[in-house]
Image (cartoon, rainbow, N blue to C red; front, side):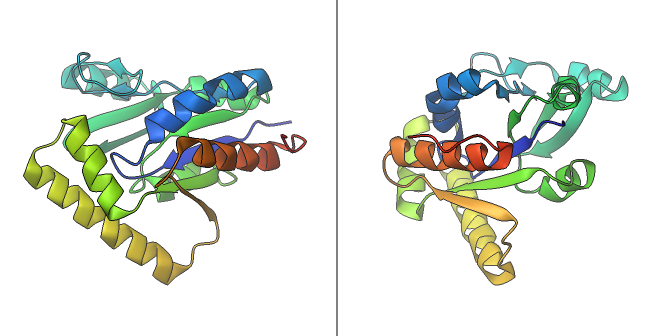
Length: 192
């Protein structure tokens, strides 16, 4: 039996890292591994538990075939190591903090991945980005605009192959939704 890839996406500030951390104990119970991303961002940056590397190191890793998935966003490079493939071959389920723009390429490599979009209303997203303090006001404006365009495009396409979770309110609501999706995709009995 092959494992399932759960490909979580959402705009910066949507709460992906918080959701992953909230769900981590449940995922560990189920044997679902959360992949640690390799990012060309300073290790001092606040946020997810990622492996920070220089741009040169990232390129060298990419050339060596160390990444199962890799993309660029917001001036940074992101990678998921080939440990992902090892887990899937062993029948283990894996949660990846992915990229909306890279979904097509991820689906080409993993056709049965479960795509999950974490959405948040614009006002909440704006507040979260300001509070986080990683982006300039112009970058926040651009990210809000990109989010609106993406949501509009998703609505027009009616992509029913993307599961949508709203994280505008309590993280607990989004966590329950994510866990239910994972239970369903992995064939686990529904959690209480």
